[in-house]
Amino acid sequence: MIQLAQILFILSVLVILHEFGHYITARMFKMRVEKFYLFMDAGFSLLKKKIGDTEWGIGWLPLGGYVKISGMIDESMDTEQMNSEPQPWEFRSKPAWQRLIVMLGGIIVNILLAWFIYSVTYSTTGKKVISTEKVQENGLAFGEVGNKVGFKNGDKIISIDGKKYDDFKFVTMAVLFGDKVEIERNGKKVELLLTDEEKGEIIKKEGRGFVAARTSINGFFVDSIGRKDTGIERFDQIIGADNKKFTYSDELSDVFRHRQNDTVELILKRDGKEVLAKVKIDSTGKTGINTENVIISFNLNLKSAVIGTFSKDSQAEKAGVKFDDKILSVNHTPVNDLIDFKKQLDEIKPNGTVELTLMRNNKEIPVKVALDKNKKMGIGFSDKQLEEKYIERHKMTLGNAIPEAISQTWDMFAYNINSFKLILRPKTGAIMQVKSPIGIARQLPDTWDWEFIWNFTALFSIGLAFMNLLPIPGLDGGHALFTIVEMVTGKKLNDKAAGYVQTVGMIILLSLMAFTFGKDIYQWVMEVISKK
Image (cartoon, rainbow, N blue to C red; front, side, top):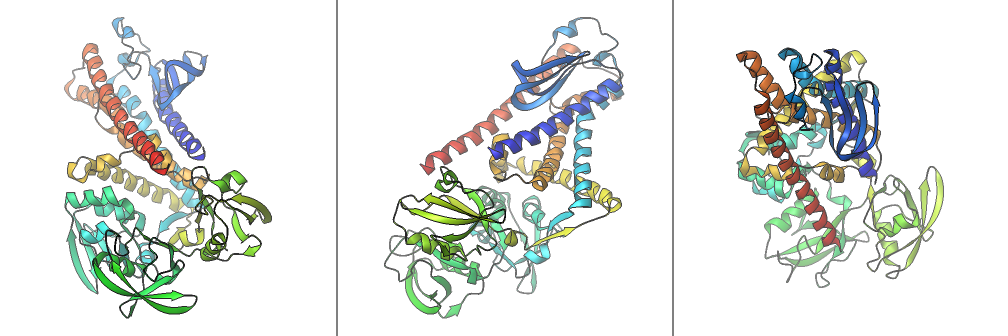
């Protein structure tokens, strides 16, 4: 519900302000605005009230919104008024330059909104940057596909197409946008060229998660083991192999990746002592271990970690556990980290009950929670200290924030241009990553975070501006293109032809919407089915 509330809030802000851009410019040139609607009112409205010449309302279908300007063929597809003589207050009666400004009014407001949000954010909480230098301090760790396309664990990304990035959140996408990646590997510079097919593999299988900072092996433990004949036990730490101790967790991943059908002597740490276990690495899992039957987890510190997620039908959520709660003890036994917590749950019978002591708003709260047959209660943790580890905040004066916000707005607009170029390259398969509001909502956090919401609103606002600028009939950019052609040639598209063009544009837009909504709904349904 929180995700739904967030996307409705963001869409409402963006749609109202975008349409207000059209409304205010139309009124500025004394055009009559017949309707101003948040969301679409196909068939009926949820709310409506007429003030002056304008009907203000809220539609039932949350797919954008519209303003209906007299004498203009728009989303309403109302062509009847075009059969009468043009009136002075109508859109079609105004000079082309005025009509062009009205068409671009929503886009301009979207850009100004993003600039305003960034300006306020940078001068209050500061510009939030994921420091590339900090993330790459020990090199980078790559997933299966990243290693397959030519990256190696320990690499540092110096530049993409000659450009360096101080903010690491732009690095992953820049790799997909760019042609040449310059890498530092073992003290030497290496150039890597990715094909569209390789980029497609990254997008399809790993996305942004194809690369991350290297992390110490010391924090990881065996959370579950699917075989009992390996010599590995739950809560063991795998700290080395074949007489060589690991430094980073990706070295363990390399063992699973490169030693297929080979026997390896693992070095384990168990109850503070080192033990050895000879195991076979087997991709099928039938005769040995692999990443499917040995699950490795990070041992979170529960003094800083809080409840960050709930699974579907979570028993903990039903019992009254809330987001941002800290777990202090299980059945009155203090727990300091995730291993402590899971060891306590291991002592409980399947479908049993545990009493948690929670810290909420500086108060200790006891809650009894029923476990399922697998001794789980349906919670996930997040540790903001870990998440903030690589983050830097640069707080600015308003005078410095304003030009920095302009620069950021342009950078994000360029980001949308590059994303669109990627979508137009079929071999990357990037078009399958285009999301409807349903898909976007499912990626939003489960908690209400105003900083995230406003930054996401700015990003979404720039995306909306870019999308509307595309020269597709039915979008603002399509209307603007025909108006510019008219200004250059002196010839105006007749009303009948304009109606046909608008119809074609609406068919294209509705087809794209049907595709994105259908894809996201299908993925949602399949995920629900797979969890049953």
